[in-house]
Image (cartoon, rainbow, N blue to C red; front, side, top):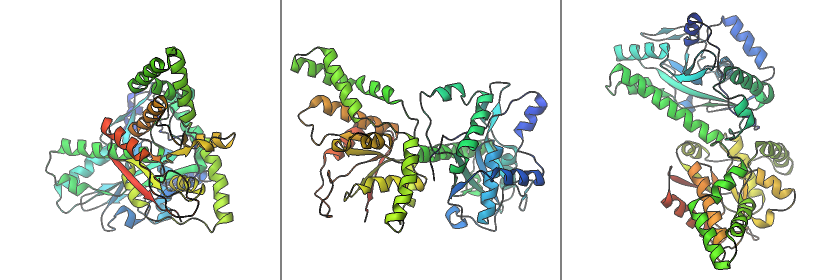
Length: 452
């Protein structure tokens, strides 16, 4: 899977009450026109799909299946229908039937457009979902399997301070539609489709809540699910590097270290602050998906040219943890290929590449810049006698952990020259635990990785 621009949702202009009523309904096209649009779109679009098997989804072939997409989008629906057709799964644009169910199509959206010209997307209870809940409540033998599906047009996270994002913000109708068009045009060949395990509508209804509470609970479960899926694939929004450096310098712990440095060294406060800022610029990564894309092309050739491909085992538990935990990858370190390979594998498995602790010796011209843009942050081998550097480095790691960025470091400290596993060094583990005790938004999951 190649990186791309970012994930998008479609918006629509509401011009009249009649048009609003139309927009509240599922997308209605003749089957011929729907299939024609799908064929035309896939002359350009290429997809990578995850979990599109009945076993991975936990589906019962004897029970009805309905798909849910986060936002109303014809292009997402076209992609979903094609992937279901290829995988031999029930198709979303086909009728949905059961003992007390007769629906024209087997899909619904979690959000709909709202407003006249500045269109926002608002969560609502789909009429189709309401009818299905009614059918399950009325018939004890009726079951419906809900399969959430996320479609990512490109893999880059949003920027917190992006001129393009401000110009074509999601809540502006023209911008939203134009951004979606650009996403398909520019990054349709790097589309990721993520199928998630089916939810049992019968189990939710059997909890005995009233009808409205049942609908609200379904909506809440799906919203959390889509949010966690997006976080595991794209990660949190990226700060501009300058903004991130300023936030580190402005933190209480670093300001205190700057004051102590100025008093201890008998230097002006401005000079101590400039030194701290230099340290931050030396450390902080500058994550860029254009660099990830470049390395993806280069490494795909490399693995297949030098090796006989790459085999990956036990990635499923990592994917299950990615949405709810702060992931810290702790691989063995036998060569410089280790961190390149791990990021490559995670990216191709639909997970966000981690920010990687790298030795300052790798911060060389050209190579250092490429590694920094690929997620590497640089650290000195020893900084116990430099309290200002220590404060800046600790604050940066704490920022990564609390914002939810996956991180990678080697507990061995350095690279093994003999191929044997080295005695562990506890410095990075100590920083991790201190950050967790200071402020933890998610539980931490350490992911040991063996590379052979």
